[in-house]
Length: 430
Ligand code: LLP
Image 1 (tube, rainbow, N blue to C red):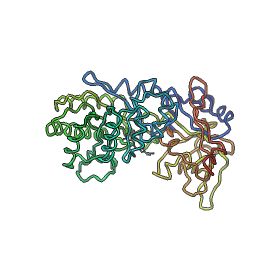
Image 2 (cartoon, rainbow, N blue to C red):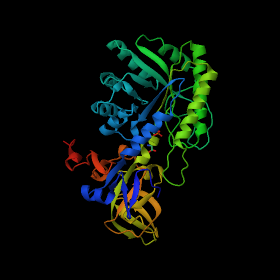
Image 3 (cartoon, protein in one colour):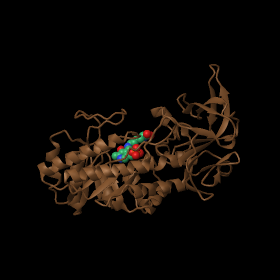
Image 4 (cartoon, rainbow, N blue to C red):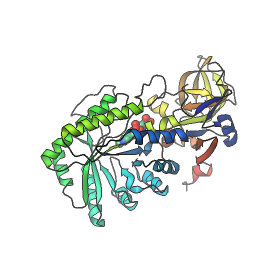
């Protein structure tokens, strides 16, 4: 298993941020999401320090769908990051955390009138428009309230990066955004840019998630610049802001070969500078929206092993006090993870196990076929790289309680999200 920045072998026991995970489990006595706060902070800094240019302003928005809670908005604001919010719930959480709502960009492909009204109530002034009906909603609201709202239009560049090769096509059928190949887009932009209460600033593009080929990002950037140039010529408006999205791939297992972030961001900036120069466009600000790459490796899940079971067919299971409710990504995507037995890290990996949870479903698996030391009831298991899209995608299936979240730093643990109580499970029931 790969040890990330703050992970240490302390005489055969794993620690994160100076906290021995055996002590941590003894304190909370239940499975937990644990975050290395220092690594998280260092990654925020890495983005702000490496994604900058002397030619234009840059802004890093943390895509908070990866992990959203009060403390994360407080933490990212220390590093002057903005955030991408996709729901009223994410905006509300940011607001409650005291986040600067001018740094929130409201996304989504089906924003309701009520959600857009709530965004304005919260002081959100940047809206990413996905389609024409929400454009009309926000235009009506801005007029009614006599306020100015900044808007970006989400465009679809047709670059499909999910397939590990990028292809350009005008026949992209993703539900997000407005195709740059659809001629109607120019009328929409003309219309949007002529509304007295809307400041049409430019475009947003996001090509997908967990992408390893930097060329896909560069190609998308070129397409966005070419399109912007075409718009500027056809519609005669200035494009000032481009949001190029997130999607930078991360390490989960040895099979993943992510881009080295610092050098990638430096090359990315260079490509953007070149495109800006050759296009002649006076783009004032470039935004990116990392989610996973900002937080995934800082988070892990700590479980207790309840026991092992060898099936008649020969598969040997380790059962943990969690499962698909706290990490649905194997069930959903066949996602792969690494893990270790926290209190046996000096021992040899001599047995092949499958890690299963306690949910009433055969698909309740966290990792299939992983080599570990002999496991026993009471051992602790750490699954790494669960910092993104685990807590935020967790469920109460089987009326299981969602896990708490603890931040670890300088030898101290800090509970930032409490685990569900039994009462929480019925609090909305009548
Ligand atoms: N911006 C937009 C508009 C997005 O839709 C997303 C992710 C991001 C930024 C952040 O992408 P990231 O940097 O995290 O790759 N549930 C899936 C991931 C869904 C991602 C959705 N959009 C998973 O567990 O892998």
